[in-house]
Length: 118
Image (cartoon, rainbow, N blue to C red; front, side):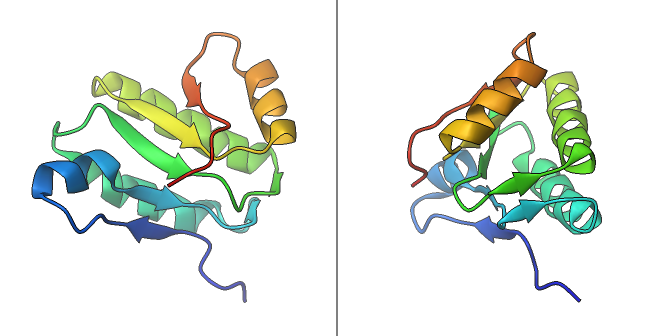
């Protein structure tokens, strides 16, 4: 059995700052084996947003490998957030993953950042 692959991140500042910076940290893999667990984390975070933030921040710094199921998960989350007037912000991507996701997302559904995640 794999260890948990994602977690919530909360800042210790005010509630508004917490909502703006809270997100999910991915593990080293986002494969078919982790999709259900990561979706549960993303879904819970989306429900917590309550329109207080315009983006769900996903820290991808630890992420090294993603498969088709992981990509589909990110697309579903991004489309769901788009329908709510928000966006999925993927931060901390390594160069290889940034390039791969950019080529698979020509319409710019993902908000991709290669900057180091906080």
